[in-house]
Length: 408
Ligand SMILES: Nc1ncnc2c1ncn2[C@@H]1O[C@H](COP(=O)(O)OP(=O)(O)OP(=O)(O)O)[C@@H](O)[C@H]1O
Ligand SMILES: [Mg+2]
Image (cartoon, rainbow, N blue to C red; front, side):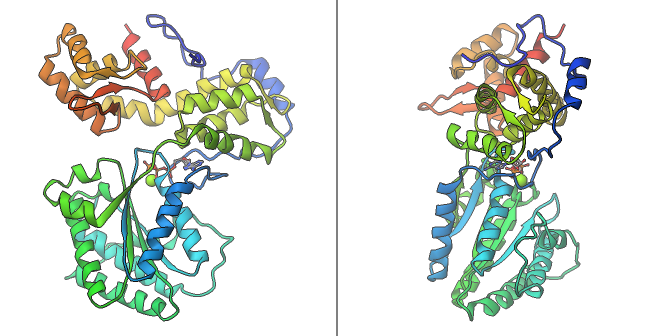
């Protein structure tokens, strides 16, 4: 198995050095300056959008069916930082280039009425900006999203939403163009099920008037588990489309492509190590690529530079993501997640429960913790019949857990 850069045996956690050795700092001054192309973050378009051809083809086919009078709506589902917002922005651009009207709005922890009222604003803004676009200017989450935050008082936001959509669709249908409404992070709404049901009611009423439109909502993988009683009708209405990690070929392209545009070169062993450590997670690819690029010496990144870069990337992800995740876990969840993280291979829940029991956790409590941890995306559940098997496949998180639980 590939060794994790900087991996330390349990009992002797290696300190994470935030400061690079002085000789590296000095040598780096000599490197040819070139802007770092990688863009780790949330909702930031990557320098190269790798993979996602299958998902894009499915989305396009659904849009085509909608145009032909058979509307198909989508729930784009995937774990944190897997690239949902990026895909929404990519698809918005594709559809706008094809002449469609696209509204992209983002949910916040706000009431259903506030959310719907914000969406009315975003739709009106789209209607107001109809006309030739400068497609070279990609402002990321631009006016449609910004407007969605405006908290308008409205007596009946659902009725206003129907009216706004009708205006937009009628405006575009004349030229055979479609209307697509993309709604990101809908699971942040406290009443997600309620909002989805209201969107569905709105769409059904518009079909009755022969005014087709396509909704696409994006959320974490557990979206439909959270809406319980509304599950059945909603899952049939918003057809799930799941996105997962990139395959190794696409992940390699996501690293090599942007680097080739610069004067810097990554050794092939470094690219392979980044691809393996990231496990296809695009956020890790961007993060590791970013720190690797920054560590280049004389325009080159060898495994020696990458070892330093890895520590910096790991420290950054730990600070941004893992620390809050760990802080939010109950003591039992911590004990159970640590047991799961001891093996990279999925293990049956029975074996994990037995091990947790030796640490003083009752089997029933361990089972519940496993479910909770899997639902939150902290551990992976591999379905095998009734009882699942569990693992922490995320190499960076696994290392973080190892360091947490090794500490005296
Ligand atoms: N297909 C891809 N190829 C390369 N990089 C990507 C790809 N998709 C996403 N990224 C990068 O991964 C990071 C996370 O992407 P994004 O914010 O779209 O994920 P998300 O699923 O919306 O996350 P969140 O859980 O924060 O909503 C960003 O830095 C983005 O540039
Ligand atoms: Mg997002």
